[in-house]
Length: 384
Image (cartoon, rainbow, N blue to C red; front, side, top):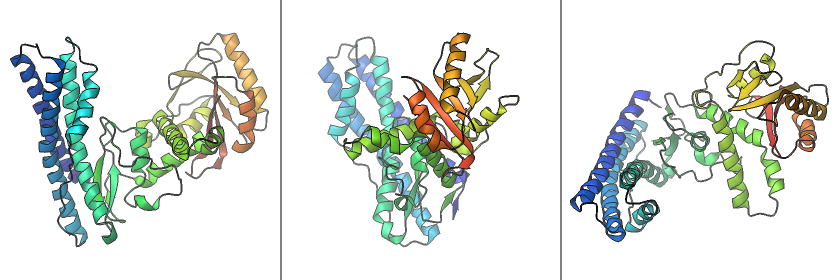
């Protein structure tokens, strides 16, 4: 079964309508309360009103969003021919949870910052209502797991970050993908402004425009680039939870460095032409957007930085870095210490690069003749 892009868009639009209504309700209630009291409200009174209003708002509009999710879930189960009980709303809202959100924003409330406070609290209502729909789908899918029900986290591509893309790569058969160990840290977490929609299905369900196999390659490439083994060595002796979180954070950062079109849509990144195409093409394969400047000895711009380039295949990696460092120093380039090297064999070059880099320097190594688990050329990012 394939869920069409138009069907997902209709579902998203219905949820967005409830989220926007919650946003408007929350902001209007706060502003009205503030104006009725002439702006002379003590902090405790404002806190109590905001807490009660947010609780009511998230409960009311979250239930409506969850009901929409239930309808979508039941329709999908019927189409799949899976015999399950009708789905149920899952939107647990407590005064304690809303109180914590209000307390966090209250710390930033000053007499001249009420508008910002009202808008941020309304944004919390918007996000919580969207999460109610996602949590409802997850709750029902996990209830019906034994009957073959699965769910996927599908980004819509508007506020998609590395964390969401990493988790989206698990597809509908998410419980079977545990070979990476650190992958999926906090799968059910949804950050602020998250645009992911949780969609129910089975192992064979697809969503038009959603390619978890490609996203998994993106994840594998980023994971290989940051080299989890080296992080584990550096953090030896620390609790596994802390180490795995560090690895996950680094994977997400690495995905965020790539073009969103490449990461999410599998689009091609322009590699440019000319004498440096060997480097720009190798970087473009991994989703890096680059540009060439006419600045002497520093022609490559990437991620807002200037990078030196060297072909160290069949040569000395250490000498290549030393030469680039001197050239950049002679050229007066402001942003020093960023290097791209083409190498023969990643593993053999890594230790030499570690020994050659100075504190604060970064090198990206690419072996264009060797493929990694993602099917892309092997790459490592090393920062000292």
